[in-house]
Length: 319
Length: 246
Image 1 (cartoon, rainbow over the protein chains, first blue to last red):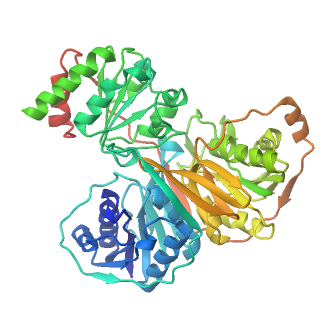
Image 2: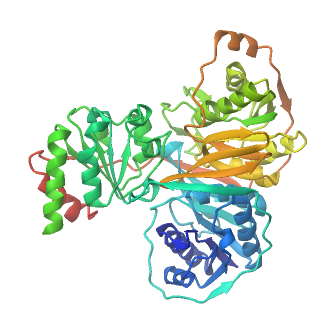
Image 3: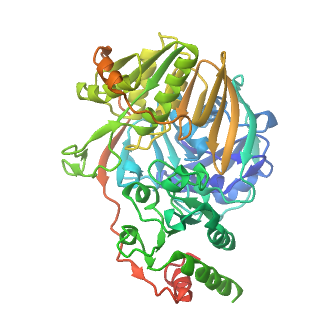
């Protein structure tokens, strides 16, 4: 028996997502009393570092032609590794890559699955995990009854824990199906923090009055190393790009700290952000529904408050 | 061009969420149901656009009981040609995907569309499952898709940006915002939808491997602590010392 975890890499580098996934898988293996084995696909260097996060063994299909993601190829390789290692649980992050894999792997292995879990499984004779449902308005507990289980883990559900040491990397030879999806280009917004992975998020809404006023938001975000986000009306009017839209029909996020600036807090917006650990709301309307979901509130004109907040953070950083 | 669009029925985005039977069932009392927005606004409309440009048929498929016909009719009113309903109680994602794949396998669809996720279960699994069961490529989170003959160029949303991929039909695609613009059913469309067929098909017997055993509401937030707008140093101090976030 084992817990197999897919550790995703991009351009030959492991991201925080890989360390989160391995940490989750290792803790799951401890719950089940078994070992955690990591599988990586592509030519990422230094795969042995996954041992620090709890992998007892790291398997790698070290082939640069596999660096570009394709759900069909990756599913086939991970399924072969799961079978070769008698895996009882297969873990991955609920990332753009993991979301394309979790369903495929479940179908491939004829395994029950739970996508986007945010807690470790129980060990009371049955395998149960929890995930947000109804876009964050409720939590479901899911029991998986098949011998093999597939789970994807919501980003920022737990912090990577590097308590172990590097382990040896074993080459894993798999039958690789022919590639049917070719990646032509990847366009990433340079220098910014990707929203779904961000620990700190500065989000703004219609209270900003227009796209030309976003400088104060970007300044605060840059100072904090935070991602920027926005509400749906802001994305719909093209004040900000669509990928910044958080909420029920946008991205659901769970950062450690979410600043909601000039956002009233419609139920659809709250659904996408109410898993944030701490919410700070800045709004001049004392009746804004967002204050009910906030931990800290500032009721004042955002154009006065945000620069003052940025100054206060600067002082804090320099202290 | 034969296009299949997987559509799901979900509670309206503003519906009040509550549970019954000792928090094991979603409480449907008083809840307005809609077609899952990603299925309707983006997946279905992009399929209709392709049909309008190149000819072909757009078929809806839904896994669910007869009460879902109202939702399916809405898709027919927007412009789908016909619909299939697999007559059963939709259980897990894999159960639903097995029903869809079982129907689709003999019908040679060029593209199978679904939404990127449903707004109730938020699983984003069914598309990938259908693709795996039919041995097809799966392109998720598509925000743009152009088709030239059998070759598609698809832009998909990834962390912090976009990725552009090429793939040949047949394939499964999941639709994100941007793939198309929402359409409203016309009066004529609504009239015509009444004559369009919904073929009811018996389900395939398959085991259910995962089950929701319990629902909870998110833990209630403590009272919001209001900070003096003139004292942002205090907010920073609280975030550091009390919330321990920075």
